Amino acid sequence: MIEKLDYQSAGLISGLEVHQQLLTAHKLFCRCPAGLYTHTHDGEVLRHMRPTLSELGEYDGTALMEFKTRKEIIYLLNHLNVCTYEMDDTPPFLVNQEAIDVAIELCLAMGMDIIDEVHIARKQYLDGSIPTGFQRTAIVGMNGGLPFKGRRLSVTHLSIEEDSCREVSDKGHRIVWRTDRLGMPLTETVTGPDLRTPEEVRDAITLCGLVARSTGRVRTGLGASRQDVNVSVAGGSRVEIKGVPKAGYAVKLVHNEGVRQVNLLRFREELHRRGMREPADIRTSAVDVSEIFQGVDLGFMQRALRGGGRIFAVKLEGGLGLAQFPTQPDTTFLDELSGRIRVIACLDEAPIVLSGLHMPEFPARHRVLDRVRRKLRLGENDDYFIVFGPEADCRTAAEEIRLRFVDALKGVPQETRQAMVGGFTTFERILPGPDRMYPDTDSPPTRITPERVEAARARMKPTPWERFHQFGAWRVPAETTEFLIRRGGVAIVDAVVQHTGVDGLVAAVEIGQRAKALQRRGIPMERLGASEWVQIFDLLTGGQISREAIPALATHMATHPGSDAVAAMSALGFGLQPREAWSRQLAGLSMEDYRIDLGDSDGKRLRFLAGRAMKDLLGKAPARDVADYLRNRLTQEAAR
Image (cartoon, rainbow, N blue to C red; front, top):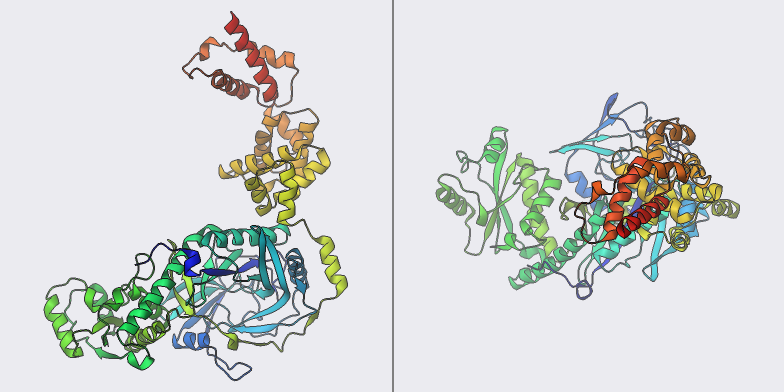
């Protein structure tokens, strides 16, 4: 088992497909509101999907795979956010021009060539996530790039497309979707295969996200941005890890996929060593063994039989021990079979598939398994697999076992894999090919004029690298700058600095670090916009409050909507006092009361006393002045 990986020696390469929802009022091809999520529904629609021929008369392999699942697809509809367009009962409206404008701004930020005419195409999706069976999509820009770790990360193209449904449940042959997200505009940014380590993938996802957030015209929050990561190693194939929700998750996912591909290439060598080189060399046979397992005390088998299902044994000639060949850490080739069977045969009750070498314990185990071996006429080097459920699904599962071993002869099959908790992946579908794309004759092209591009350029906000340069000159920590870009805080800092003249470092730290800490404590800091922060910093630069009072003022304003900074200052009893006034208040502070063991450091003692003093004087005196006062007091007492 290979778990550690030298990425350079393995030839690991990776690229991204970053999907970002756009902040528009309406959906992409109708006038339903975008971003209105609901948890109830007014009606349901039942659909079954079937594949159609491409323009060249070919069927897409993914579409055929989805058709084999024989899924019953249910859509939950709420009249507040769907119309007849989403259900394919009405032709599309003209494409949302606001969304195209946002896409143009993103293209310009990445230095891309803007397409002269935006042409809508259809991309087949038969998994049920889109009721029409296809997604409308269009390329807006091409041939761009991003500054990345001292080099250029290429961006091949940016598309605008409609979002899919949200999955509610997927059990057996029935899948349920909620349609509130369906049709929302999003962009897909595709990078070149320029990333060489899992950490680079993580950092590239972060960079792409910062570029989108810098426009101020994209949605934020859970699910608003999703990444697909393409991974391959030398001798392997492109595998797409679908739906990576956070940049940090990519590190383990990419590493484990690299490990998986290296191990699958070793698995191919093992198959070749056993004389399995061509599809005809993979010989399987399926036998109904339900009668043999009729009285076996295994709950999953008995449930299958009671439900009218069957139990099948699938013999693999010369396959002894192959199912136990390691792939990802803590997983084996049996998990590869399990993933295929779960998705395509719709057998989803654990353990899904069992290997003859590792059957669970049950009474009369040896006698039962001997009967299975005799019925299969198992040879010395053969292995078998057990599947259970509806008979038609068991037969599909038996065929998928054969097909997965056939794919293994090539090493790494091209497929889309679902990101799982713990950094592992499982089979989702065969990787789509070009046969699923064809023109959308319902939608006219949109011409992009030079004037429109220049208008978009004039609206552009500074890019992340420009912000890092600007904030770096203010000595703002990089992580604070990144947080401000991600949360839309850079525009607030700009407004505060421009209108109050406060030092940029002070504004960035208070809005980026202090406010972040308050947010983590449950304070709704998102309620404070640029105008509220300008009011707070006006009091600071006007000499009415100390800097230390800012978090308390911000907290009061966030928890008392409608309260301005002056009212908050009054309610909290803040307001800078003359030195004579607050020093009189501190005169009663007994140094003797705090002669506790703080070590030999005078600095520790001073910080302790200053903390006690500022608790009483918050908003009435600057911390620096209070520290100077206490330092003098300590010096005088030491002299006595």
